[in-house]
Length: 108
Length: 116
Image (cartoon, rainbow over all chains, first blue to last red; front, side, top):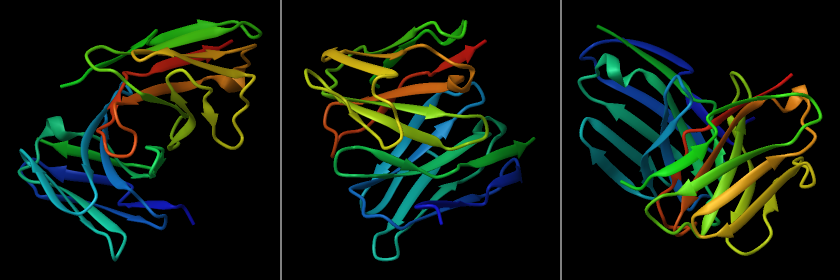
């Protein structure tokens, strides 16, 4: 069993739909990261959270430490949100254990 | 926001040669830099953690003599793939942070290595 599990693996949505990507982890963490990887490979850090909830524009990330579960939500999805979203468990030294990613495709 | 620049973005080399990849933090001092590798359709995997002025810490299964990491300054870390083989062909990406356990991570654009 992977230490960081993401679901779904692939997700296709219509523009405007509300999207949820889930992440469960089995390791102890200092922080949980949500990353966005574009087709060219470049990665952008979306959120780093250790408790509660964070919001940035149309993106919302939540974490439940007791349940070792985090979710990434995208409201009013848009084709430009199409990317691979990666959940990563962060250790105390900043080292990350990555999930396999969720490939999101938002259709116009 | 902070920017991490990685160079080259793409490199093709012959088997047996060495390739150096640079990772620079452009507007902050990166006390810690991380190097990752991603094979096609696979997860990112941490290769090593690099702290300025000290030896890198390698993850299990990563050969330190093959993947040489140097973090000589607070803004530059380099990864040298020595005696490259086709199986080293991969996407290599770095990240940098000012504070490894509390600070935000900033990622480079990645370097795609193809070894012929």
